[in-house]
Every structure is written in structure tokens, then in C-alpha cells.
Image (cartoon, rainbow, N blue to C red; front, side):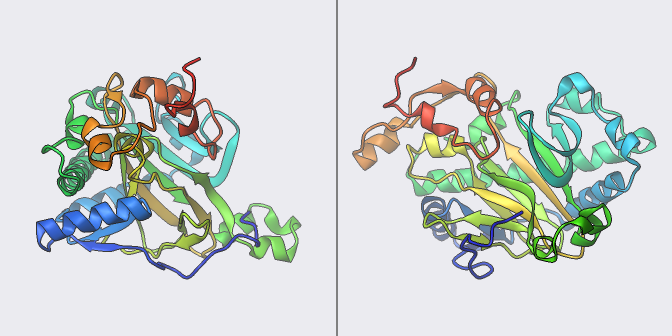
Length: 332
């Protein structure tokens, strides 16, 4: 559960909301500022078709309503961590009050998953949704590159690659009432009333995350001063989170935001997160143009996404993964 001593401030305090229908140069600079100061912002008027969103959300609701055994049949065990999961987050003992479906966006891998009689309908919804949010992620990355005065598509080309390693994660967080009915009545009244951890504190290892949730709150982001800001749910918006790789590419100018999900409401929360990643063998390191423009030393050494992902998944959820990739750390 979330500790009472943690500094949790007002909902949406200092959270940027960026209207993508405004002047392009203005939007570009707003995004750069948000990435530099927080590593998180919301976008509205993003041009993603509401029907595509609602179809995906309904298919996710239908999936999580199925019996557990049927959900567990999705995805081969040898393909972990992909497929269905319940409470276990990753492979290192992290747990949370969440069930999820993790899907690799490689068309071949996706086509091999079975969703019972709903396979075609579900796969179609996933394909349409991912195409839309991938396009949104590319547009956001292009706008940030423009704001940094980098060549066009500097960032987006990494996730446009045909072998890009991007994933979609559907999370279902049960309500507080559901948790209590599962046996939490043995806890004290005070501990039951505290927010419970649905998905623990962490950063995302990829380049960028595009996240949407239903009308139930629970997402919290950490500010540089250590405070936690609850993010209000907004069906018309997408949340955008800077990942570890984008922090490296910008030599620390952009911040990979720490965030978590808590379950406090008397309603279930559903979130859909698209994690935009590069191909496994893409080389990631600070861009020379960023280092030159800022006249600062190189903070990170160059590595491949495959190496970083392997290392990231060997750690606990809340561990700081980037420290060992600092340029001051000996390669040994």
C-alpha cells in the first residue's frame, strides 16, 4: 500500500495539457518544455478516431470479464512476459493489484495468439488501435525533434522500423470493493482505507509511452522534487510519458518520468499503454547534436536496445536502470 508519509499534492497540479490543434511551433516548444521539466504531459485534439478507441476499450473489457482459466490460455508460456498475467509484474517478484494482457506488436506474434471465438474481432481492434497510437507517437516525437532543432524524424524513425520492438499493455485494476471481497477484511480499517498499489513505482524503458484510461483515476507521476501528482482521467486525452531511451538520446535533457498506479476507487480502472520501442539491435546513445548544442559532457554510453532490455528485465520494477549505463561507469 502507499505510505501515508509520501507527499501527494493536488490532482493535476502543474500537469501540462497540450492542444495539438494549435500552431505547430507552439505545440513543439510546449512538448519540449514538458519533457524537460516533468517527462509527462497530456495531449488533446490528437486526431485519433474515437471509434477506434472505444472498440479497443470494449474488447479489453470483454476480455477481462472472461474466466481466469480462459484468460490464462492467451499466449504461450514460453513467450513470457507476453500474454495474460495476474498480480505478478515481470519476473523478479514484483506484484500489484492488477491483471493485464501484454501483446507484442510484431504481426506474426500477434497472429499466433488465440482469443477464442473473438480472435478476429479482438485482433482487428488491436491492429487499428495500435496503428492510430503509433502514428500519434511518431507525430509527438517529430514535434519534439523540431523543438530541439534536430533533423526530421530523428526519433520517430526508430519506432517506424519494420522490426521495431513495440508492445501494447492492457491493464485492469480491480476496485477497492473487489479487493476487500477477496479477503482484505483481515487488515486494519486504516490499512484498508489507504490507497493500494496497482502497479508499483517505475520508469518505462522504451522511447515513449502513449497511455489512455477509462473514467477512473489511479495514475500518479513523480515530480523532480519528490512529490506525487495524481492525474485525473480524461477520456478525450492521451497521456504521454518519456521513457529511458529518450532520456539517453537527449543526454538527460528529457526526463524519464517515474510513475505508478494505485487502486482507491469503487470502480474498476482500465488502462491501455502503447510502449514505442526501437528494433532490438538499434544503437542508443546521446545524439552528437544534443551534446554540441548544450556544450555538456556525454552522460551515457552507447548500447543496443536488446542489451538494455535484457538488463532492465533482470531488475526489480522500481530499480534505477540507467545508472549502470552512465558514461562514467566502467564497461566492466
